[in-house]
Image (cartoon, rainbow, N blue to C red; front, side):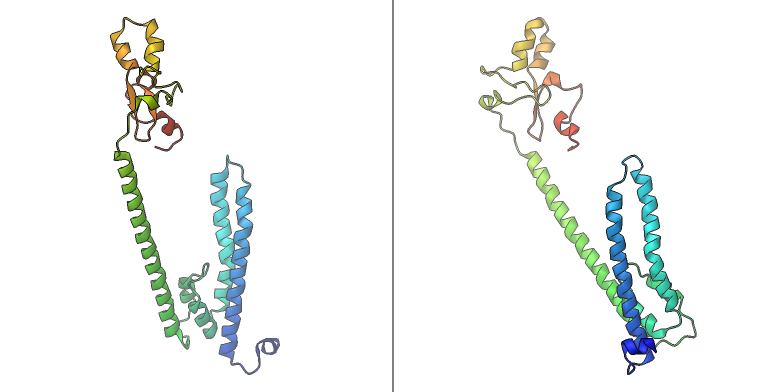
Length: 237
């Protein structure tokens, strides 16, 4: 009675079921959107100490609450053939698992249009799969190009210019690499205290130039250190 006055008395029961299914799907989608929006600010105000554990628990609980409404729709459609077909045609939307719906179908139930609905379901799944594979190929190609660009940049030579290095500072001690006379700044300032040490002199007059264009005095680096101290602290390399 009330349903006929809203949908129309001229429609068949199957058509009314399909219209009701479309409205149910639209309502469930709106609830999923509202639920997702309400979860974002809640996760944003978490304490950092227990964020990992709480986040996993809340996400599991949120997914269960979000799918509960879809499960109620599936249970309601279990004995309504037109409702089942309408759900199968929209099974690609988020939250609706077509496997749950197919398990609820009784073996002796006659469902008009079931074959076409399943064909559409498989066609939509094929399109989604092809889209994911295409995106994966594009991302892999972009990553490969960026990787080659990084390798090419790291293989480029570094110009050594003593006039420019007089104003360039060591990334560790922040002192100039060379003085105005083109000599190592640390060799002219520290070797005064140890003029008899030949190995110390050689170490003070050595530099390390990294691919990132950072420069360090030889004695500013730890023994055997091969990474740029500045970039390592910034977790770039």
